[in-house]
Image (cartoon, rainbow over all chains, first blue to last red; front, side, top):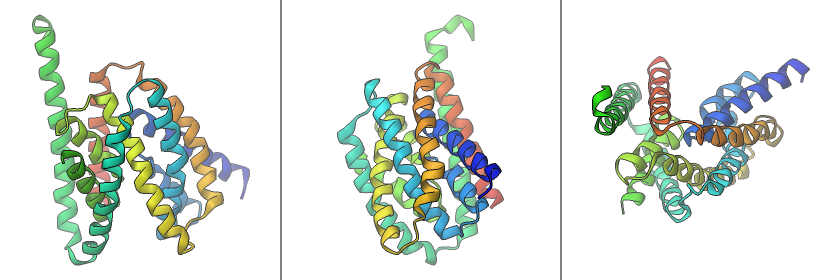
Length: 132
Length: 114
């Protein structure tokens, strides 16, 4: 592996970590394409991304715990339930028409984004009525 | 019960569409379970850790996990996560929410493009 490749992997790893710590995501969205670019196959990249996620979320959750934001028992419930969800998802993934669902899911994400923005703006207006 | 449903939904969609569970867990924790934004991101991280660990065990047993490559991106990412969560404490909740909404839009666009 060349020095450039290593620098590329470290830079994208750092960026994925900042995203993870800031927004509470695992970083897989950057890990998987990075690992594919490094030469791994799609499946191997996804499996390897899961391992890369472990130090990332451990550092993030540990740091957030120090700030008093971590609700450990809730995380345990969500995490374990999520394993069951992944199991079900993996079983039905092959039997659903993927592309149409993909569009619906993207629209759902846009809807959630719009709702979050609307909710935050409403709160700000409630707090500073004269400034809007 | 709400937390169980949130976990199930996040896991289900992440397996179906290959997106991380956090992209759904964070807004669901905020909108459905009424968590504060920072609490939601912190709790999501720990929940992802549990789910990813289960995945690593399953895929690792099949020999599909490349440990050296995982360390190459995962260890810088751990440093990044410390920086990211420290940065999060310095921004307002509104900025954090707008940033997250932007991330949702980017992921949605990537889904449409793929």
